[in-house]
Length: 127
Length: 127
DNA sequence: CTATAATACGTTCAATTGAACGTGTTCGAG
DNA sequence: CTCGAACACGTTCAATTGAACGTATTATAG
Image (cartoon, chains in turn blue, orange, yellow, cyan):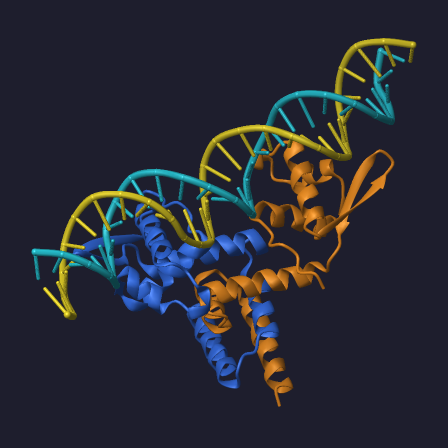
């Protein structure tokens, strides 16, 4: 499985939009971008082309226009991104990051409940 | 508080070593690096200089040698790094990341227990 | 004392990334 | 038709990053 080159930040940003939309043209991605981002059409085009070259997206010529869709499972890519981050910043140790997240950022009561149930299930399964 | 320029990956890697050691010379950082990293002394020197220029580290001339130490609270920087990542990859929403982490990466039983206690405490406090 | 090793510091260099330009082509409104 | 808007694609360009070089200086083992 030929390893893809790493995702740059802007590339991930656009890839996530394509993932969310399922498939998208340059213009659709541009329009899905927050207005204050202020990217040029040509710039979005360039990034999508790069994503295709890197193997993350696949372009299909529909009529006169290119439609991009994901070539790899988004979750898989996300997993790689998270793993890379975890390795670099926490030596691959998830616990400190999890603790940081649940301490620091606001979780609602429901979210806490939900996490507890997830942990319960996990503890069950872990036997 | 003048915002620092962002931390590049290699820079964060070295900064973390300085944080861990409390203070360190170029050589000490070099030696604390995993052997397979294979960085040159001069390269480590360059990165530490950049970290100083960016305001993350402060160099003190001790004898003939530079000793680097952190200029900002490491936890603070770490918080920024995590926040940036969370924003970019999960739209600032911690829950999906937490769920991904506890599902995907191996947590030991004790770690799960510990998380549950943390969540209990958090739920208490949230009233 | 002197040659060698270690260091600081300025400089360089290639690859990657963020961002856009220019040109050729095409499609649809008048 | 024809003209302008939209698009594709090749190209460019500056900033950042990863990595190291070269030179001057100093400390130290012989």
